[in-house]
Image (cartoon, rainbow, N blue to C red; front, side, top):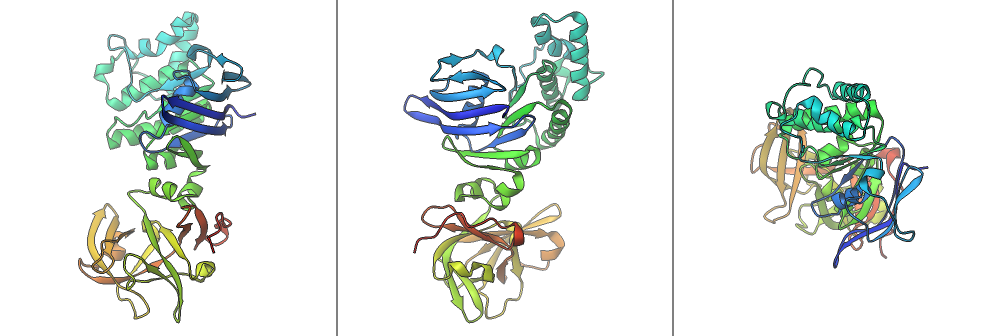
Length: 386
């Protein structure tokens, strides 16, 4: 039995549908990350689980009992749902010490002094704040304050943990540190966790599975690798990009030198395709390639179209390369180790190969097939017209 179950859940705000026909099960102990752009419904979904929003329809079950059921008229208050929630803002009591903040909710539950001390101590140890018990929130860093909020939540030992973008207000260094602590906390506590974020990197690092949402609906759910490598729709491909991905519309053409993609953006800058793409010959498709899967050829032969190198942008040991089709506006982004592409110069004409990627139907924007992944490639999911 799944620990958390959504059964055709819907939430409307007047004419706006924030969550639509959501059906999803979360196994016991899973860390599920709900990923999506602002306004996609992910926080509303979390608040429906917590009992902070009443769904407009459907059912939600935690463990073996329904906490909400439209047909049965069930809507348990938050205190009776056995959940703990960590928000973006820490909401710590400034006049209380760290220990008092963590212990406050336990005291309100009527636990004995000894049990309160034991649970608070264990929670602070899990988030690595032992020794900070007598400090006040104002003397802590943002990351430490968020860990106090986390300790306060896990001290109550809820069945389900809910995280509403808890790291978004932290700077990058603190975000990385607290993210590491979250992974340790999940391993130590083992509670089923639902974590909301719009940060793609955060989702890929933390999740057992990622659920991608848009416009209130669930687009795809799976482990991070499958979501990144085999997005089922163009929307998933775009939103799981870091910093962006390449989507190139064009016709697959059979030529003397083999298969070519002739881009609509510039028919004179064709790109070779592997023989795996033969089923798409003669069709107009959208080819999706991540920046790291673009191979730049500094001195292309006549069988390869040429692109103009617009800019080289180093980022640590990585170099991002911006490319343009001739004089047209269409652009691509490549990423490679710094030393590999260092000899390139701005304005240079280069060729391009695709190491691996995906084929999307132009009409439906759904995944039709993949290439370059070997035996890991999924079956074709959408048949192209014609």
